[in-house]
Image 1 (cartoon, rainbow, N blue to C red):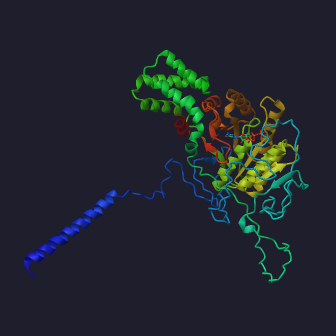
Image 2 (spheres, rainbow, N blue to C red):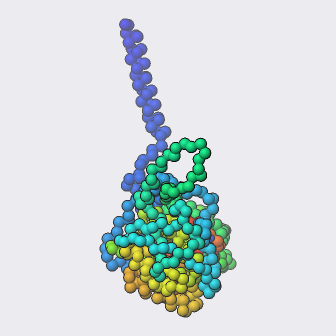
Image 3 (cartoon, rainbow, N blue to C red):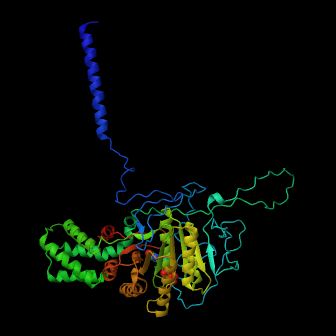
Length: 513
Ligand SMILES: Nc1nc2c(ncn2[C@@H]2O[C@H](COP(=O)(O)OP(=O)(O)OP(=O)(O)O)[C@@H](O)[C@H]2O)c(=O)[nH]1
């Protein structure tokens, strides 16, 4: 072989290698690096990632839970083991296309909420007590869970004042059906009469929307407040030099959005001083300044964790209070869903013994998430029902007992005394970790008056502001906190089962601007 050929081959090989190396480098550079940060780092919203112990429910975090200050013991109880869903974790309930809980023969969420307490009452549907020494899984109580179950309106005499509706049975407790014996083929088959037990379908629990970042996802629901606060304020601030007339307009805008006088003055003062010292030239500068001032006014330092984590040997106890129709039962149900999604065992206490539909409504929520419900007989003492619920919660080792109380006008002294009694009686069994006052954001200033009275009677620890989707007065959040010094912990942004979000000042202000 001549030298020229050899040199040619060597050069060709070198060029080939160089091309391959170049190609590899270029392809690496173009590739987007996807590092797996699921192990050590939390979600991008900075919250802690939760382990899904819910048997298939999707749980992020977003909601923050902590142990109540009333904690007597130390150390958290572990969440229960996951429940294996028969259809697999992805099992879904049929999409009804409508976010309500109507179940044949049962009330829908929110039904009768506007019915005053002194109206005619409906009969209560009692459910037989499960025979369960040691408190195991209960008997089937939901007509939908069993084949040929009694009609929902059948009345079964309850032997005791307290009625416990156990959650639907866990799949492992479902009896195996007898093997089916193939019938011999016959020419003219007799009509078949079912005598063998047919497979008992485990109730389909619902998918729960991820809890992380809900406020962000539901931001569109705040559009009315967005126009009233965000757009007007940005328009005024972005207009350039502000004269006294413009400042008055800013004040009026904030007052109209229900921020209240104290918050309005504080915001305006801060805006004035910051505008005087900082260099605000563009619309973006104005937006950043307004964001900073509003967030600071919402006191991001306040503890907004819901005290729903159990103590050693006893559950957390949450009391839900408020005037009629504010959304107490709905909020209790929505929060129960979040807790269940977080792997917690929840027991609901229906301490509204006046309005049977309210207890039915709570029971429906319980059935949807697999939470046991303790309810009382009509006209039973609500305090005793609440007491029984907590006692049952302790006996059965649940993580949280949530007691939904009857709506009551803050002006009715007798009813307010009754509420005080409910709390005192419960405390004989276990300390109350959280008293959530549910306020309807659409009622504006009247909500504040209500809040003051409730705070006096039951020492509220957190506020749930509902129906923020239906008002342009999102500023009420500022007012409530300023007046009560109690943090807004949760906000209701719709009637849907997952339209409850943790209140986060930054995300809230971002949604407004
Ligand atoms: N738009 C909207 N509606 C809500 C929200 N929260 C609750 N509701 C509705 O408000 C109505 C009253 O809700 P309930 O949960 O029954 O109120 P309640 O306070 O338990 O009522 P009482 O037991 O009568 O005192 C229902 O129609 C709910 O669907 C919310 O955040 N947004």
